Image 1 (cartoon, rainbow, N blue to C red):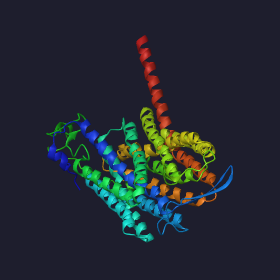
Image 2: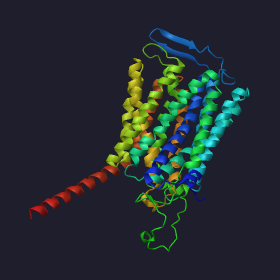
Image 3: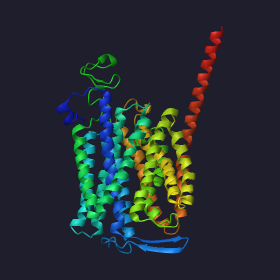
Image 4: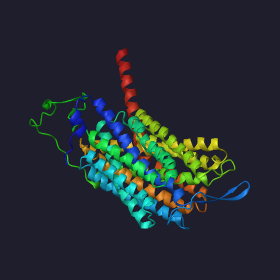
Length: 493
């Protein structure tokens, strides 16, 4: 399906500079994916209202029991197995999301990405609102909420392959890590804004926590449909000089007949898997997202059920405190992108961050309960090292591999490669929270041991690529030394 210029740009026109288009793309895709994560975060905030938890834990003064008595919950989630039902909804959402990611990437390389992304945003908004509609329609059927979340997961899967492919179309590799590291802050911004907005709206009724973010997403979806430019080719921009080319310069393509264009077929699923680097980075992301999403879904619960400085925090305070992890993730994404650009070594950077995440996880579990300040500092550091490689792999690495030299200039692999990498990671994102639900009932220390093991495996899976990058660096430095020595000898002669 051929892409067309956005109707808003066709109507108003006047944009000629490449930098203007790039800014427009960054802003629109940033806000768009912020909305995806904003709506994705809502259920974890509303859980405490649907299923008031009884806290059981140890403290210096013995075993404590506190119960949220401000609300009676919502059937069927306020029963004895309510937490398990909510956990099943989370796993079902992530399972459909991860499977849908593969199909979304395949379709994205064959459709107009602007239309495709708009469909994903409208669909997500509709089914997020339908989940909240259960509040006003007085629905208490578990399967209603389960099916709604599963379909929402399907539409959510459209978002990531689409935005990464569009941004990858507009930015070259040299500054891609830093640009995408900053741009990837939308994940944390979405989590934080979703948490704060949903928590604020709870006092009006939990249905509003779903309804208002859905309306915001529809509004942003309309902006995407009207103004988002998919690629320089669609906008008839020469990426080399950054200006609109009204007349095609055929001297750059001497083997083509005038007016003839090079057309590439979309890359197949198996062909994309064979691109060098796709498989190891995809498997690395499996374990990286297992760690990241365990924190996404369980960190507020862990904080509220763990005595900090000898006291338990309220659900609201625990939820607010958990956003520090995302703030650390913003810095981690920017640092990982900038470092990988400077070193020109994505695998070395990602592996180094994952190895650093292991002691950070250990220290947070061991010393995070000493005081609020210790908890905040260690949570920030943990978020930085956990989310750094996650952000790098899902953005710059995916874009790099989607435009790999083995594709011979075929850019129609970006969405497929992005979907393969993030789809594989999303399987880990589903497994981590599921395992945590079972393991945490007996020991949170065992949960952190699992997370540290996952971080170690994530780093080890990149070993071959790390060795390859280091070998390339050594060869490049040796060549420079030889050239410098030859230059010195020539000067002396």
